[in-house]
Image 1 (cartoon, rainbow, N blue to C red):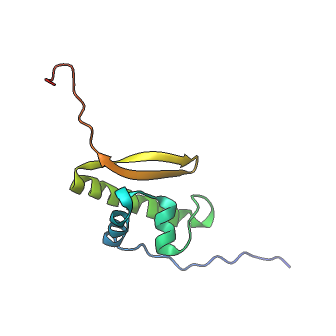
Image 2 (cartoon, helix red, strand yellow):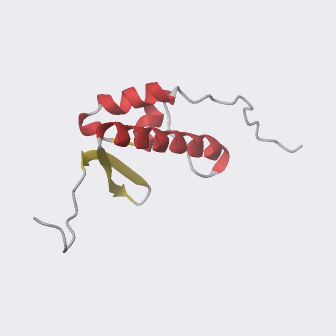
Length: 105
């Protein structure tokens, strides 16, 4: 007799973008990472490999889109900080105006 691993076919649905945005905005300096957002909304994190990969990539894309929306609305940018080789934390910071040689100071 062979045993077969049973994988749930139930597809999790993403939270609405405005709820993800509200969560990120509620954090000091809008600081967040993928694991933090996944844990908040799903009570667990997803792996970029194995059977949870589709949900990992769906949530990562949603968070990136929400982050871009916040950057545009706030006129600031998210700075990336590597926490370890598998996790990047984002923090909203002011845009730095770059002066070119021909611009007046």
